[in-house]
Image (cartoon, rainbow, N blue to C red; front, side, top):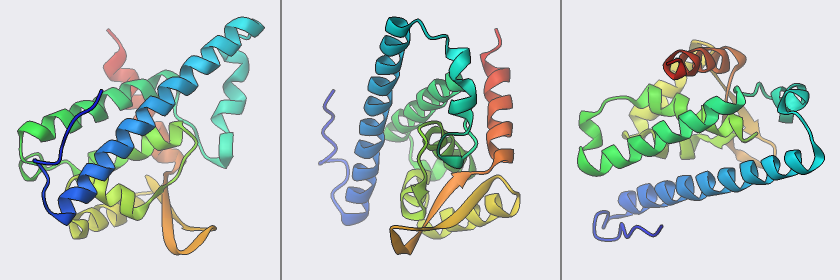
Length: 176
């Protein structure tokens, strides 16, 4: 699926947003491919997903979201992006939720995100996003740590408390 955003985002900040949107779409495709590969491997080897849970929950030394809920989070994130194409993001006012959702998906993939990436993904001005990052960190929902590969930047992940809260939320909304 190719979407041309060039006419919608002519300035540099808009180019950054376009890049973040495309990066999110690529990440979603990669996640789908990884999931399909894991399902294929499990079927071929006759492995039950429950046998893999302990490894998945501690992958990369970070708390891991419950497997199925990451897909729900990805769908909500994609819907948020679609919504922002029709409604000015200034009117939506959900930077903390966007940050938590972005980090939940990243944790599910065993990734940490840079502060810059999270700021862009939040859909609000960087100063607003940075304030919300500080609030979420103070509440113990996210953690900020130096990037070992680049001392100039910091990475963000969901803290165990953040993963637990998001898991409970997705458990509640997926019960039918």
